[in-house]
Length: 219
Image (cartoon, rainbow, N blue to C red; front, side, top):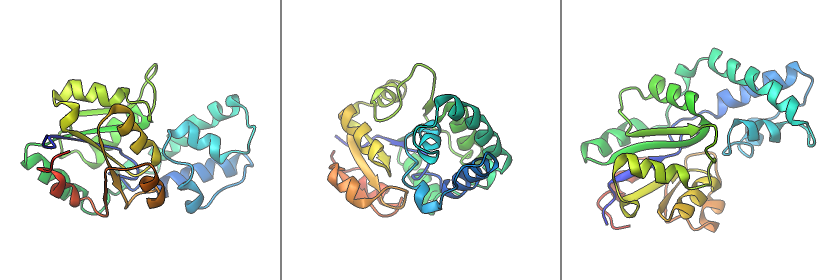
């Protein structure tokens, strides 16, 4: 079937958030006397939601109570630092425009907290009307659980057989596989090419515009 719906991961796929993530987390870690990390180290922390990122950045064995106390500080600082300054990756705007012009549905499924996913999309990519935006919500499993894919398919009314999921991390490929849809590994993001290959990504693309070449292909 033709591709009629593209679901995107957010951080590392649509938005280049690594700089602001590393800066805000490091400021809170330093404030509380914990070791800070390089941007390269943060590439290994991201992909599974902010709580998991914080857990990975803190010393092994740190209690959940400590994580819960630091997380709001990080999130508050993240938005004080200026969500509007986060850049989309080069070619994202043109690609989204091209997909919309072709009648392809565009949606977002992210492990970022839901209200912040909505805010990021509205602030940075507000010129686009996404068919669905789903982030971390109480009672809803995070990626790589396929639940979000199924929910978006119900919203878009596009069959899973005509839907692809595009992301840069291992969790993204696993999410697509768990949902039984085609996966697009995005090589400009935070993940590693060898991981995406090892997991069997159906397509690998080096820049966003290549998604336009996939529309019209059989999946």
